Amino acid sequence: MSAQRALFVYDDASSQFVRPLDQCQKKENGDRAVGTQLTADHPAQALLRRGEAYQGPAVLFGKSFMTSYFRFPSGRKVIASSCRNPTAQLDAMFAEVDARP
Image (cartoon, rainbow, N blue to C red; front, top):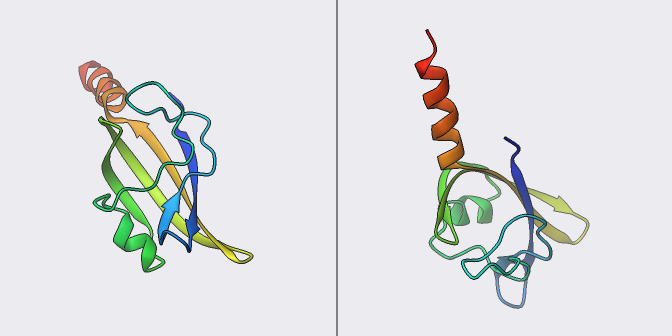
């Protein structure tokens, strides 16, 4: 199982973290998530705005993930990086380990 990654760039005009690119994440309709914003109710939102990291569960486009978000400055842009693992895959992996003698 490999983690999926995304970058978010803080857009001053909209005051939002926006995905300028994303190689893995897809929206519910199957389109790439490029240009989408980190939702206002996302658990990482407030922490990233304060410059802090977030690690924990999040729902992205209707799917559950365990996520880590980190904010770091890059020149004049503020960038947040996320790493996520689908919760269903983690649950299956843990169940397999638990079933071993």
